[in-house]
Image 1 (tube, helix red, strand yellow):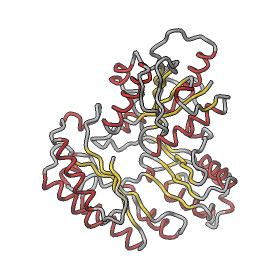
Image 2 (cartoon, rainbow, N blue to C red):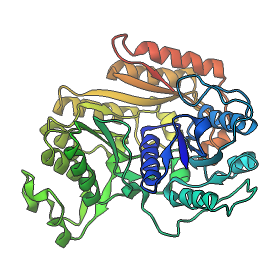
Image 3 (spheres, one colour):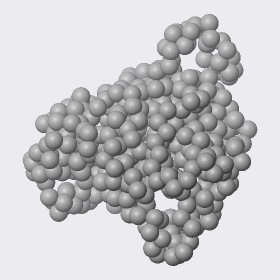
Image 4 (cartoon, rainbow, N blue to C red):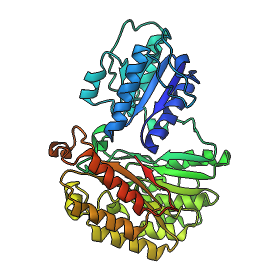
Length: 411
C-alpha cells in the first residue's frame, strides 16, 4: 500500500511527519509521488490559525468529492473525476478537537493524535485485511503498544539539516494558544535517546541539527546519578563528568553536552520562551561557536497590557533587558521573533509599543500572525474585536519596520 502525507504548520509538524513516514516505511508501506496514486492520505494538521484550519477543510472536501483541485504537490496536477478516493486520516493539532471531528465525520476515515501513530498502522492493517467496510468515522484513541513516537526512526526530508524533537507539549497556557490542549503537557525525551539519534546523523555527515520543542528551553529530564556514566559520548566530551552529576538534565546542560560532543555540527533550537532563557543558557551559547547566534525569541506583543492578557509572564522592559543581556554576552547575536497583531483589546497605543520593540531589537526575521480566535483557549471568550483590514494594516507596518536587507515572513 502507498501513503501520501500533507503537512501544515510548524517545524515540529514537519518533524512529526518524518516520523510517521519512517514508521510506515519500516512496516513495508511505500510513499506515493502523487495523491491520486495513494491508498491513504495523512493530513498532519495545524490549528494555530484559522487559515490553516480552513485549508484542511477545503482539501478534505475536494478529495471526497473528486472535484478538480490543485494538487497537494507543487506540480499543479489535479485530482480527476473518477479517481479512486484514498482513505483520509487526520492527525496533528486538529485531530482531537470535537468540533473538527463533527464537521468532518462523514469525510474522514480516521482521527488520531500524533502520539498515537500506531493507530494509523492499525487502520491500514484493517484495510489490507478487509476488516473495514463502509466505515466513515473511526477514532482509535489509545495506543495499545504504548509507542513513544518521538523515538521512532524518522525518514529525514533533508540530507544536510535534521530536525530533532527533544520535548513536546507545553505547560504555559498562553491565552491565545491551542498547543497545551492539542499536544498536552510538556514531556521531555531522554538525553540518551537524543544523543543516539544525533550519533546516527554524524555517520550520515549531517552538518546542522535543529532541536525542537514547543518550549524547547524548558527541557528537563530526570535521570538517576548512576545512569549518567552510561550516556553515550559523555566520556568523550571535553567537559568533566562531575559537572553533570545531577538528577536533572536541563536544556543548557543538554546543549553544552551536544555542542562539545559534536563539534562539527551546527546547533540551532526552536522555540524559546523568554521566561526560560536563563543566564546559564546565554553562557553556554557564548562559549560554543557551533551553537547558532541567530536566536528565535517570540515577543508576541510589546504592550504590557496585552502581554498580561496573553498570559505572557514578562513585560516589555524585561524582554528588552533580556535582549540587551544576550547582546552583551554574545556580541554577534541576532534575533527573530513571533508576534500577534490584532489581539482583542489591542489599541493603536498598544500596537505602537510593539512597533517600538521592533525598532529597538531590529529583528532579522519576524513571523507576523494576524490574531484569530481559537476554540478552547482562554482568549476565545474575548471575541475578535479588531477588523481584518486593521490587522492587515498593522502587519504591514511591522513588515516595513523590519529593514529591507532582512527577511520578512508573514503567516
